[in-house]
Length: 185
Image 1 (cartoon, helix red, strand yellow):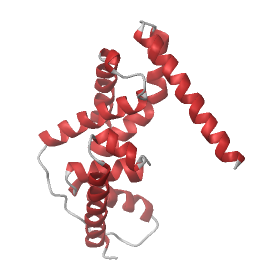
Image 2 (image 1 turned 90 degrees about the vertical axis):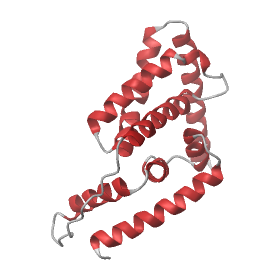
Image 3 (image 1 turned 30 degrees about the horizontal axis):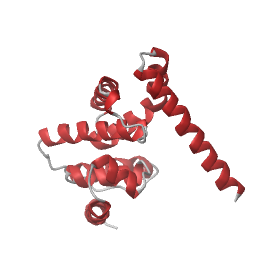
Image 4 (image 1 turned 90 degrees about the horizontal axis):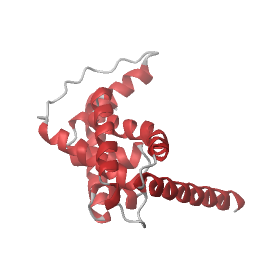
């Protein structure tokens, strides 16, 4: 019980800190801007990398997300978290880029049983994710890799929670079938 209270208190303190940094950023404080960037940069790049499957493109999207977020920071309502606002921008930019790319089917090589299994599994996971449609991949990545709640995924993708649940079910099912096809398990 005490651990849950500490976690809740820590989250509340982080939210209050973030509100203060956003307030200061709105008033031209570049230190606040730098703090918000350093606080969210790594996770934003990781999220974009998981969605786009390309680290360099993910860094571009992260930078573009920050620029757009700070340019339009006055649009952020006071009752909304900056992090959610920023991740929504990032996911939308990733989705736009994914729509522009044509789906290229990945060829699977059979996975060999030996000591490099972990690396091979990672490669197969990436190939399986690449084969999912953008909306399913995004839902799966945000929920399973980024560990966002259903509500956070729904808010980030601007869809109802029921849509998130449906997409997640479909994504897991398709991913499972692709995995079995690739590794024969």
